Image (cartoon, rainbow, N blue to C red; front, side, top):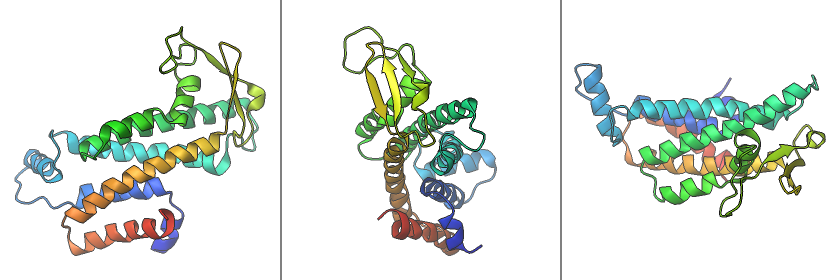
Length: 234
């Protein structure tokens, strides 16, 4: 398989995560005697605050990759496969909603670690995203949901089972006041994924622009970043 074939088969978020892992692995750390000194110097080179932050960075990368597997599965095969099982529908729906919540946590930590400009607004925008709202209504605070900015009793929601189709194109949420809210799952997923991709692009672009790597390492990183710019982030 060529590099192009491999990248064509890999999601945008997964490629960004791969680049971030490359930065963690390839950033030059010199003159250390043991693991503790390496960790301390790596923290300084990355301009992190705490000695455990490189480990947190790695955890965020793994979380992005793992959650993206679940997200990509729903993008590819939807909520219903050949089994046509109600149990599978709900597993896929609740699973993908919580995958996005996990990505929210990973991105929140990454923008702090890399001191991304406008962190407060980025966090607020992500937390108020429709897919996170949907996760909170269906997959977390389903019977104790508090509507932002409303001084009322808690709300509750249920999902109309008959509204679930393969692509979640018209999910119907029924609230306490019997109002019906309709959501296009895949479209809502794509909106958040594009936000995540944009934030990852800011981080990666900044790190590749300001750091020095060995020639072969930089070429490996740049190959992936150039592919994203030419093929995905148009």
